[in-house]
View 1: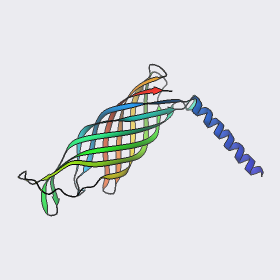
View 2: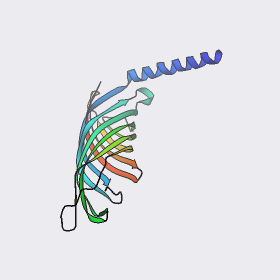
View 3: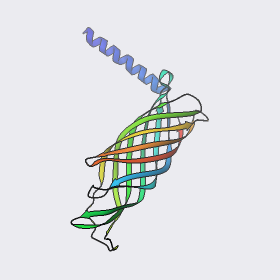
View 4: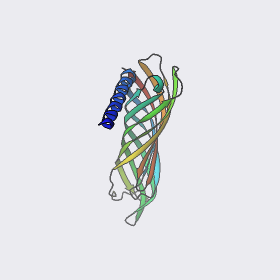
Length: 207
């Protein structure tokens, strides 16, 4: 009985401390948009190419207070559109040609970050974990004479993603923050890691 009481007491103290920390913390949310460079593999999985594009979405940050004031939890939901993929010398069912496509990617990321300093300009570094759904669009397959070939069967990909990140925020007041970051999105597939880079600019409003 004594052991159970000690456990209950410890849990009560932890919950009270956690509630107090969240009540005093800073929660901010807002839109983001920026430049994207995403790679992908052709339908056979033997070639990897990259293409530029743009992205937009919604992101948020919860920053703790007091001794944990440099630690924050963040999340981001983004849509990336990349066009102009071209894979040369792709052999499908005995026919060699050039395969082209565009990519629409959806990212759901959740992680943490650490702020360096407490001034108006606040650089940070962090790590996120989540998922990436990648859908192929605008596909075409042509031979060396630029004649159309039957489109190969393609499918979308839903994979776990790891996202190291870094950036800087400018906070003129407690309520407002303007940020610029660099987010590397590493999508993990059975054929290997599919890297991508996203450079978002965000505007957050704190509550």
